[in-house]
Image (cartoon, rainbow over all chains, first blue to last red; front, side, top):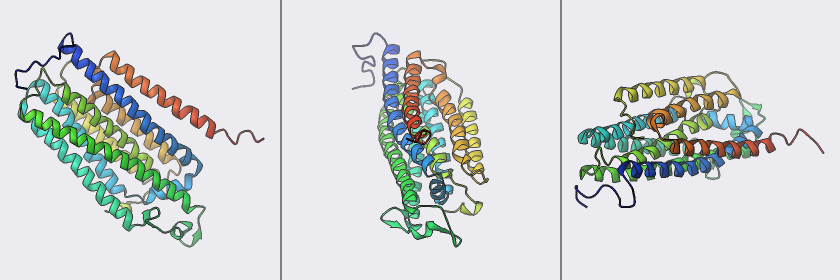
Length: 231
Length: 96
């Protein structure tokens, strides 16, 4: 494939139809993703409503500082992703490459923080089975608390499944971004052929939206104290 | 789409709004709201997700087909959550 390779595939009438088809396909895929995450959110809602105090107690122990920093990191990566699409459409190759690399860098930062966070959770005894102390949950300052350790573990399992599935999506997204960088360096992403950047962007923003809901459901459901703001 | 190319400052303004909403939602988690944390957090999340969808994903200038996919996914999500919770939330209303 050279730079003057036919951009229009033979089974499309014109470029606009081809681009519209690809975008619509990505939206259909995202609709199936909504239902994957939606099913997990529904399970979460059922148990959140059934064991409110246990879920709030577990949420209050999650690392709100890393969770908040990661939210800002991910929103920043969505900004650079949106700017990548803009750069492709106006034909600014250098800006496109810079924005794509920044998006990858921010995605990597997010995953790096996530690894640190999982390790901190382990040290804080917040990992069911591996590291968990049932006794510390049943008494708050010497007073019997109406909390069942097994329900706390259920909340923590939701935390690992939801953030884990989200992180898996991030890794896939970063693979797609690396592919875009290769295409961009070869000069294949142009104002005429910007659709690849656009549909990877749709995926990346969707993963961002999932995190926008994970933040309040997991980290912000319990009442935190300013002293919680540490790594 | 192939709609108008939005100027970059639109993205910067949306980004500023998203960061501001994030700071608000984190600040709210330090208040004593008890069970209302989740409700407030999800409502702020809906606003943030709408901003990302409308501007970053460019739904504002997207075709009707894209909107159809978005609305269909939300419609099925409402069925999924609505029908499931209508069972779980009403199990104790009638005791047999």
